Length: 212
Image (cartoon, rainbow, N blue to C red):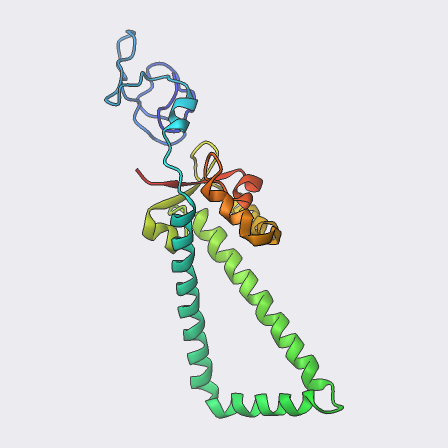
């Protein structure tokens, strides 16, 4: 007998799946054959049947979710900038920019070096913050970022189960490879592959599904 939700093999006479907690529909204490559940499929049907019924999230749904996450990120960055300006004052930043401009045009290399270090620090901070956000949210009980949650999308493994933080991390950094493919084809693949997977989903063996 198999769990109708996650496909794990369960012993005869079990009322709940020990893996996901799903009630074993058609369970009976009697040793008779299990009855079919309301959907018409017999308990113990192959996992492939459940896989075929999944609602994969296509390219446009995922694109809108990405836009929502981008707006959230811009909002957070705006708050951080507003707090920094409030504490230091706008004149402080203006003076720093003027000094940096004079340094860029003069023989003193201190300001150009400081500018490069500042940019690299910002890029590193953004990368780490993005990694923790995407990997943390997708491996949490929500199984998705705020954008995906707003559209009812979840990130799972190939069997429809929640993913670990390690797998979510692999999926996030696989996007660096996806971004190297010209014309965004690595992302557009989510619109025409069989399971609506982008390149990074294939690398990390993940699916993006719609809640049904």
